[in-house]
Length: 429
Image (tube, rainbow, N blue to C red; front, side, top):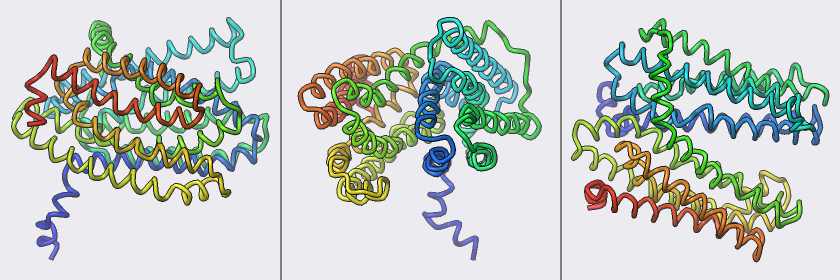
Protein backbone atom coordinates (compact mmCIF):
# COMPACT_ATOMS: atom_id res chain seq x y z
CA UNK A 1 0.00 0.00 0.00
CA UNK A 2 2.73 2.44 1.00
CA UNK A 3 4.73 1.52 -2.10
CA UNK A 4 1.78 2.55 -4.25
CA UNK A 5 1.41 5.81 -2.38
CA UNK A 6 5.02 6.71 -3.08
CA UNK A 7 4.27 6.49 -6.78
CA UNK A 8 1.60 9.19 -6.58
CA UNK A 9 2.43 12.62 -8.06
CA UNK A 10 1.70 14.28 -4.68
CA UNK A 11 4.30 12.10 -3.01
CA UNK A 12 6.88 13.00 -5.65
CA UNK A 13 5.90 16.65 -5.25
CA UNK A 14 6.53 16.58 -1.49
CA UNK A 15 9.84 14.74 -1.88
CA UNK A 16 11.15 17.36 -4.31
CA UNK A 17 14.20 19.02 -2.72
CA UNK A 18 13.21 22.54 -3.77
CA UNK A 19 9.69 22.04 -2.40
CA UNK A 20 11.13 20.75 0.87
CA UNK A 21 13.47 23.74 1.07
CA UNK A 22 10.53 26.09 0.56
CA UNK A 23 8.36 24.31 3.14
CA UNK A 24 11.04 24.32 5.81
CA UNK A 25 12.02 27.94 5.10
CA UNK A 26 8.32 28.76 5.37
CA UNK A 27 8.17 26.94 8.72
CA UNK A 28 11.13 28.99 9.98
CA UNK A 29 9.59 32.30 8.94
CA UNK A 30 6.13 31.32 10.17
CA UNK A 31 7.46 30.27 13.56
CA UNK A 32 9.37 33.56 13.86
CA UNK A 33 6.21 35.56 13.09
CA UNK A 34 4.06 33.42 15.40
CA UNK A 35 6.45 33.68 18.36
CA UNK A 36 6.68 37.44 17.77
CA UNK A 37 2.88 37.73 17.92
CA UNK A 38 2.64 35.58 21.06
CA UNK A 39 5.48 37.35 22.88
CA UNK A 40 4.15 40.85 22.13
CA UNK A 41 1.32 40.96 24.74
CA UNK A 42 3.47 39.09 27.27
CA UNK A 43 6.26 41.66 27.00
CA UNK A 44 3.93 44.66 27.05
CA UNK A 45 2.32 43.32 30.21
CA UNK A 46 5.69 42.61 31.85
CA UNK A 47 7.87 45.60 30.92
CA UNK A 48 5.32 48.18 29.76
CA UNK A 49 4.72 49.88 26.44
CA UNK A 50 7.64 52.32 26.76
CA UNK A 51 10.28 49.68 27.43
CA UNK A 52 8.72 47.41 24.80
CA UNK A 53 9.23 50.20 22.26
CA UNK A 54 12.87 50.61 23.29
CA UNK A 55 13.46 46.85 23.06
CA UNK A 56 12.08 46.88 19.50
CA UNK A 57 14.12 49.97 18.65
CA UNK A 58 17.29 48.18 19.78
CA UNK A 59 16.23 45.13 17.78
CA UNK A 60 15.82 47.26 14.65
CA UNK A 61 19.42 48.51 15.06
CA UNK A 62 20.61 44.91 15.42
CA UNK A 63 18.66 43.80 12.34
CA UNK A 64 20.39 46.54 10.32
CA UNK A 65 23.81 45.46 11.64
CA UNK A 66 22.93 41.83 10.86
CA UNK A 67 23.08 42.82 7.21
CA UNK A 68 26.76 43.61 7.85
CA UNK A 69 27.24 40.28 9.65
CA UNK A 70 25.55 38.39 6.82
CA UNK A 71 27.58 40.31 4.21
CA UNK A 72 25.91 38.56 1.29
CA UNK A 73 26.84 35.06 2.49
CA UNK A 74 23.15 34.16 2.65
CA UNK A 75 23.12 34.45 -1.16
CA UNK A 76 26.61 33.29 -2.17
CA UNK A 77 27.31 30.52 0.38
CA UNK A 78 24.31 28.25 -0.44
CA UNK A 79 25.36 28.19 -4.10
CA UNK A 80 28.94 27.26 -3.17
CA UNK A 81 27.74 24.56 -0.78
CA UNK A 82 25.35 23.15 -3.40
CA UNK A 83 28.12 22.94 -5.99
CA UNK A 84 30.50 21.21 -3.51
CA UNK A 85 28.00 18.86 -1.84
CA UNK A 86 30.04 15.72 -2.56
CA UNK A 87 33.45 17.19 -1.72
CA UNK A 88 33.82 17.07 2.09
CA UNK A 89 37.28 18.65 2.03
CA UNK A 90 36.13 21.68 0.03
CA UNK A 91 33.02 21.96 2.20
CA UNK A 92 35.12 21.90 5.35
CA UNK A 93 37.30 24.77 4.18
CA UNK A 94 34.25 26.70 2.97
CA UNK A 95 32.36 26.24 6.25
CA UNK A 96 35.41 27.18 8.34
CA UNK A 97 36.06 30.36 6.37
CA UNK A 98 32.44 31.51 6.18
CA UNK A 99 31.80 31.08 9.89
CA UNK A 100 35.12 32.74 10.76
CA UNK A 101 34.34 35.67 8.46
CA UNK A 102 30.87 36.16 9.94
CA UNK A 103 32.17 35.99 13.51
CA UNK A 104 34.79 38.65 12.70
CA UNK A 105 32.05 40.84 11.24
CA UNK A 106 29.90 40.28 14.34
CA UNK A 107 32.81 41.39 16.52
CA UNK A 108 33.26 44.52 14.38
CA UNK A 109 29.54 45.31 14.63
CA UNK A 110 29.67 44.86 18.42
CA UNK A 111 32.63 47.24 18.66
CA UNK A 112 30.66 49.79 16.63
CA UNK A 113 27.80 49.52 19.14
CA UNK A 114 30.12 49.91 22.14
CA UNK A 115 31.95 52.88 20.60
CA UNK A 116 28.67 54.53 19.65
CA UNK A 117 27.08 53.94 23.05
CA UNK A 118 29.99 54.72 25.40
CA UNK A 119 32.35 56.69 23.17
CA UNK A 120 29.87 59.06 21.49
CA UNK A 121 27.03 58.67 24.02
CA UNK A 122 24.55 57.61 21.31
CA UNK A 123 21.37 55.56 21.89
CA UNK A 124 20.92 57.30 25.25
CA UNK A 125 17.44 55.98 26.01
CA UNK A 126 18.32 52.35 25.30
CA UNK A 127 22.11 52.04 25.62
CA UNK A 128 22.05 49.09 28.03
CA UNK A 129 19.34 47.29 26.06
CA UNK A 130 21.31 47.68 22.82
CA UNK A 131 24.59 46.51 24.36
CA UNK A 132 22.92 43.38 25.74
CA UNK A 133 21.23 42.88 22.36
CA UNK A 134 24.62 42.60 20.64
CA UNK A 135 24.64 38.87 21.48
CA UNK A 136 22.12 38.56 18.62
CA UNK A 137 24.94 39.46 16.23
CA UNK A 138 26.86 36.34 17.21
CA UNK A 139 23.67 34.29 17.01
CA UNK A 140 23.34 35.48 13.41
CA UNK A 141 27.02 34.78 12.72
CA UNK A 142 26.79 31.15 13.87
CA UNK A 143 23.44 30.37 12.22
CA UNK A 144 24.17 27.55 9.71
CA UNK A 145 20.98 28.08 7.70
CA UNK A 146 22.98 28.77 4.53
CA UNK A 147 24.83 25.45 4.92
CA UNK A 148 21.70 23.32 5.30
CA UNK A 149 20.04 25.28 2.51
CA UNK A 150 22.92 24.48 0.16
CA UNK A 151 22.89 20.83 1.25
CA UNK A 152 19.09 20.82 0.71
CA UNK A 153 18.57 19.37 4.20
CA UNK A 154 16.41 21.97 5.92
CA UNK A 155 14.43 19.80 8.33
CA UNK A 156 16.90 19.88 11.22
CA UNK A 157 17.61 23.60 11.13
CA UNK A 158 13.87 24.43 10.96
CA UNK A 159 13.18 22.27 14.03
CA UNK A 160 16.14 23.85 15.83
CA UNK A 161 14.85 27.35 15.02
CA UNK A 162 11.42 26.55 16.45
CA UNK A 163 13.01 25.06 19.58
CA UNK A 164 15.16 28.17 20.20
CA UNK A 165 12.12 30.45 19.82
CA UNK A 166 10.13 28.30 22.27
CA UNK A 167 13.00 28.56 24.76
CA UNK A 168 12.92 32.34 24.29
CA UNK A 169 9.17 32.38 24.95
CA UNK A 170 9.66 30.27 28.08
CA UNK A 171 12.40 32.66 29.21
CA UNK A 172 10.04 35.62 28.92
CA UNK A 173 7.43 33.88 31.07
CA UNK A 174 9.93 32.74 33.72
CA UNK A 175 12.37 35.66 33.98
CA UNK A 176 10.87 38.90 32.59
CA UNK A 177 8.52 40.46 35.17
CA UNK A 178 9.36 44.18 35.40
CA UNK A 179 10.54 47.14 33.26
CA UNK A 180 13.98 46.94 34.91
CA UNK A 181 14.52 43.56 33.23
CA UNK A 182 13.94 44.84 29.67
CA UNK A 183 17.64 44.57 28.77
CA UNK A 184 17.41 40.79 29.09
CA UNK A 185 14.71 40.35 26.41
CA UNK A 186 16.89 40.56 23.30
CA UNK A 187 19.80 39.04 25.24
CA UNK A 188 17.75 35.88 25.85
CA UNK A 189 16.73 35.75 22.19
CA UNK A 190 20.40 35.87 21.22
CA UNK A 191 21.54 33.49 23.99
CA UNK A 192 19.11 30.70 23.12
CA UNK A 193 19.75 31.15 19.41
CA UNK A 194 23.51 30.98 19.94
CA UNK A 195 23.24 27.83 22.08
CA UNK A 196 21.12 26.02 19.49
CA UNK A 197 23.45 27.15 16.68
CA UNK A 198 26.46 25.72 18.51
CA UNK A 199 24.61 22.40 18.80
CA UNK A 200 23.95 22.48 15.05
CA UNK A 201 27.65 23.13 14.41
CA UNK A 202 28.49 20.09 16.56
CA UNK A 203 26.04 18.04 14.46
CA UNK A 204 27.64 19.28 11.24
CA UNK A 205 31.04 18.20 12.52
CA UNK A 206 30.16 14.92 14.25
CA UNK A 207 27.49 13.49 11.97
CA UNK A 208 28.08 15.11 8.58
CA UNK A 209 31.87 14.75 8.57
CA UNK A 210 32.63 18.48 8.17
CA UNK A 211 35.94 19.49 9.74
CA UNK A 212 36.62 22.93 11.20
CA UNK A 213 39.99 24.22 10.07
CA UNK A 214 41.94 27.23 11.20
CA UNK A 215 40.53 30.19 9.26
CA UNK A 216 42.43 31.21 6.14
CA UNK A 217 42.60 35.00 6.32
CA UNK A 218 43.39 35.34 2.61
CA UNK A 219 40.31 33.25 1.70
CA UNK A 220 38.12 35.26 4.09
CA UNK A 221 39.32 38.58 2.68
CA UNK A 222 38.76 37.26 -0.85
CA UNK A 223 35.20 36.12 -0.01
CA UNK A 224 34.44 39.51 1.58
CA UNK A 225 35.62 41.25 -1.57
CA UNK A 226 33.53 38.91 -3.70
CA UNK A 227 30.45 39.53 -1.52
CA UNK A 228 30.84 43.30 -1.26
CA UNK A 229 28.29 43.99 -3.98
CA UNK A 230 25.88 41.45 -2.48
CA UNK A 231 26.19 43.23 0.87
CA UNK A 232 25.31 46.59 -0.63
CA UNK A 233 22.52 44.95 -2.62
CA UNK A 234 21.04 43.51 0.60
CA UNK A 235 21.39 46.89 2.31
CA UNK A 236 19.61 48.66 -0.55
CA UNK A 237 16.85 46.04 -0.61
CA UNK A 238 16.37 46.35 3.15
CA UNK A 239 15.97 50.13 2.86
CA UNK A 240 13.63 49.82 -0.13
CA UNK A 241 11.37 47.25 1.51
CA UNK A 242 11.39 48.51 5.09
CA UNK A 243 11.97 52.24 4.65
CA UNK A 244 8.37 53.24 3.95
CA UNK A 245 7.43 53.72 7.59
CA UNK A 246 10.44 55.96 8.18
CA UNK A 247 9.46 58.15 5.21
CA UNK A 248 5.88 58.36 6.47
CA UNK A 249 7.09 59.43 9.93
CA UNK A 250 8.36 62.73 8.45
CA UNK A 251 4.98 63.70 7.04
CA UNK A 252 2.26 62.15 9.21
CA UNK A 253 0.99 62.02 12.78
CA UNK A 254 1.42 59.04 15.10
CA UNK A 255 -2.11 57.78 14.47
CA UNK A 256 -1.52 57.49 10.72
CA UNK A 257 1.79 55.77 11.38
CA UNK A 258 0.02 53.19 13.52
CA UNK A 259 -2.67 52.57 10.92
CA UNK A 260 -0.17 52.19 8.09
CA UNK A 261 2.22 50.12 10.21
CA UNK A 262 -0.44 47.50 10.89
CA UNK A 263 -1.24 47.07 7.19
CA UNK A 264 2.44 47.14 6.19
CA UNK A 265 3.35 44.41 8.68
CA UNK A 266 0.76 42.07 7.14
CA UNK A 267 1.99 42.78 3.60
CA UNK A 268 5.67 42.41 4.51
CA UNK A 269 4.96 38.95 5.96
CA UNK A 270 3.17 37.92 2.75
CA UNK A 271 5.95 39.44 0.67
CA UNK A 272 8.32 36.84 2.14
CA UNK A 273 6.71 34.28 -0.17
CA UNK A 274 8.73 35.10 -3.35
CA UNK A 275 11.91 35.52 -1.27
CA UNK A 276 11.38 32.07 0.25
CA UNK A 277 10.86 30.61 -3.23
CA UNK A 278 14.17 32.04 -4.44
CA UNK A 279 16.02 30.71 -1.39
CA UNK A 280 14.36 27.30 -1.76
CA UNK A 281 15.15 26.74 -5.45
CA UNK A 282 18.54 28.46 -5.43
CA UNK A 283 20.74 25.42 -4.62
CA UNK A 284 19.08 23.13 -7.18
CA UNK A 285 18.90 25.91 -9.77
CA UNK A 286 22.63 26.59 -9.35
CA UNK A 287 23.51 22.95 -10.00
CA UNK A 288 21.20 22.71 -13.01
CA UNK A 289 22.54 25.95 -14.49
CA UNK A 290 26.07 24.55 -14.48
CA UNK A 291 25.23 20.97 -15.47
CA UNK A 292 22.31 21.28 -17.90
CA UNK A 293 21.09 24.75 -19.01
CA UNK A 294 18.11 23.29 -20.88
CA UNK A 295 16.81 21.55 -17.77
CA UNK A 296 17.57 24.70 -15.77
CA UNK A 297 15.36 26.91 -17.95
CA UNK A 298 12.57 24.32 -17.94
CA UNK A 299 12.79 24.01 -14.16
CA UNK A 300 12.76 27.79 -13.62
CA UNK A 301 9.83 28.32 -16.01
CA UNK A 302 7.73 25.72 -14.20
CA UNK A 303 8.52 27.29 -10.83
CA UNK A 304 7.83 30.80 -12.16
CA UNK A 305 4.37 29.97 -13.50
CA UNK A 306 3.36 28.33 -10.22
CA UNK A 307 4.72 31.27 -8.22
CA UNK A 308 2.71 33.75 -10.31
CA UNK A 309 -0.47 31.73 -9.76
CA UNK A 310 0.18 31.55 -6.04
CA UNK A 311 0.97 35.28 -5.99
CA UNK A 312 -2.38 36.10 -7.62
CA UNK A 313 -4.17 33.95 -5.05
CA UNK A 314 -2.31 35.55 -2.10
CA UNK A 315 -2.89 39.13 -3.29
CA UNK A 316 -6.56 38.58 -4.17
CA UNK A 317 -7.22 36.79 -0.88
CA UNK A 318 -5.54 39.57 1.10
CA UNK A 319 -7.52 42.27 -0.70
CA UNK A 320 -10.90 40.71 -0.05
CA UNK A 321 -10.06 39.53 3.48
CA UNK A 322 -8.54 42.88 4.53
CA UNK A 323 -11.40 43.91 6.90
CA UNK A 324 -11.30 40.54 8.65
CA UNK A 325 -7.47 40.52 8.91
CA UNK A 326 -7.36 43.98 10.50
CA UNK A 327 -10.24 43.09 12.83
CA UNK A 328 -8.43 39.96 14.05
CA UNK A 329 -5.07 41.69 14.55
CA UNK A 330 -6.30 44.92 16.14
CA UNK A 331 -9.60 43.72 17.65
CA UNK A 332 -11.20 46.91 16.36
CA UNK A 333 -12.61 48.35 13.15
CA UNK A 334 -9.76 50.44 11.73
CA UNK A 335 -11.04 51.53 8.34
CA UNK A 336 -7.88 53.45 7.46
CA UNK A 337 -5.76 50.33 8.00
CA UNK A 338 -8.21 48.31 5.93
CA UNK A 339 -7.87 50.82 3.08
CA UNK A 340 -4.06 50.67 3.21
CA UNK A 341 -4.10 46.86 3.27
CA UNK A 342 -6.46 46.64 0.30
CA UNK A 343 -4.16 48.89 -1.73
CA UNK A 344 -0.94 47.15 -0.67
CA UNK A 345 -2.42 43.68 -1.21
CA UNK A 346 -1.07 43.66 -4.78
CA UNK A 347 2.55 43.88 -3.53
CA UNK A 348 3.09 40.11 -3.01
CA UNK A 349 2.02 39.37 -6.60
CA UNK A 350 4.19 42.16 -8.02
CA UNK A 351 7.15 40.85 -6.01
CA UNK A 352 6.53 37.40 -7.55
CA UNK A 353 7.04 38.89 -11.01
CA UNK A 354 10.74 39.33 -10.30
CA UNK A 355 11.44 35.78 -9.05
CA UNK A 356 12.72 34.67 -12.46
CA UNK A 357 14.98 37.70 -12.99
CA UNK A 358 16.53 37.54 -9.50
CA UNK A 359 17.16 33.79 -9.81
CA UNK A 360 18.91 34.34 -13.15
CA UNK A 361 21.10 37.04 -11.60
CA UNK A 362 22.03 34.80 -8.68
CA UNK A 363 22.77 31.53 -10.49
CA UNK A 364 24.84 33.36 -13.12
CA UNK A 365 26.70 35.17 -10.31
CA UNK A 366 25.89 38.58 -11.79
CA UNK A 367 26.57 40.49 -8.57
CA UNK A 368 27.32 43.75 -10.37
CA UNK A 369 23.93 43.77 -12.08
CA UNK A 370 22.16 42.82 -8.84
CA UNK A 371 23.98 45.68 -7.11
CA UNK A 372 22.91 48.16 -9.79
CA UNK A 373 19.31 46.96 -9.72
CA UNK A 374 19.10 47.13 -5.91
CA UNK A 375 20.43 50.65 -5.63
CA UNK A 376 18.41 51.94 -8.58
CA UNK A 377 15.34 50.50 -6.84
CA UNK A 378 16.40 52.09 -3.54
CA UNK A 379 16.91 55.55 -5.02
CA UNK A 380 13.63 55.36 -6.94
CA UNK A 381 11.71 54.22 -3.85
CA UNK A 382 13.07 56.99 -1.61
CA UNK A 383 12.47 59.80 -4.13
CA UNK A 384 9.07 58.73 -5.46
CA UNK A 385 7.67 57.57 -2.11
CA UNK A 386 8.80 60.78 -0.40
CA UNK A 387 7.11 62.93 -3.06
CA UNK A 388 3.88 60.91 -3.07
CA UNK A 389 3.79 60.78 0.73
CA UNK A 390 4.30 64.54 0.97
CA UNK A 391 1.29 65.22 -1.26
CA UNK A 392 -1.03 62.29 -0.50
CA UNK A 393 0.05 60.90 2.89
CA UNK A 394 -0.30 57.18 3.57
CA UNK A 395 -2.15 56.49 0.32
CA UNK A 396 0.67 58.12 -1.62
CA UNK A 397 3.21 55.92 0.15
CA UNK A 398 1.17 52.83 -0.76
CA UNK A 399 1.33 53.70 -4.44
CA UNK A 400 5.02 54.55 -4.11
CA UNK A 401 5.68 51.04 -2.73
CA UNK A 402 3.58 49.45 -5.49
CA UNK A 403 5.33 51.38 -8.26
CA UNK A 404 8.72 50.36 -6.79
CA UNK A 405 7.87 46.68 -7.23
CA UNK A 406 6.98 47.30 -10.89
CA UNK A 407 10.06 49.42 -11.54
CA UNK A 408 12.50 46.91 -10.03
CA UNK A 409 11.07 44.17 -12.27
CA UNK A 410 11.65 46.37 -15.33
CA UNK A 411 15.11 47.39 -14.12
CA UNK A 412 16.23 43.77 -13.68
CA UNK A 413 14.77 42.77 -17.03
CA UNK A 414 16.47 45.63 -18.90
CA UNK A 415 19.83 45.04 -17.19
CA UNK A 416 19.69 41.33 -17.99
CA UNK A 417 18.75 41.99 -21.61
CA UNK A 418 21.53 44.55 -22.08
CA UNK A 419 24.28 42.44 -20.51
CA UNK A 420 23.17 38.78 -20.76
CA UNK A 421 20.69 38.44 -23.63
CA UNK A 422 21.13 34.68 -23.73
CA UNK A 423 19.66 34.36 -20.21
CA UNK A 424 16.63 36.45 -21.13
CA UNK A 425 16.03 34.50 -24.36
CA UNK A 426 16.52 31.18 -22.60
CA UNK A 427 14.03 31.96 -19.85
CA UNK A 428 11.38 34.10 -21.55
CA UNK A 429 11.36 32.39 -24.98
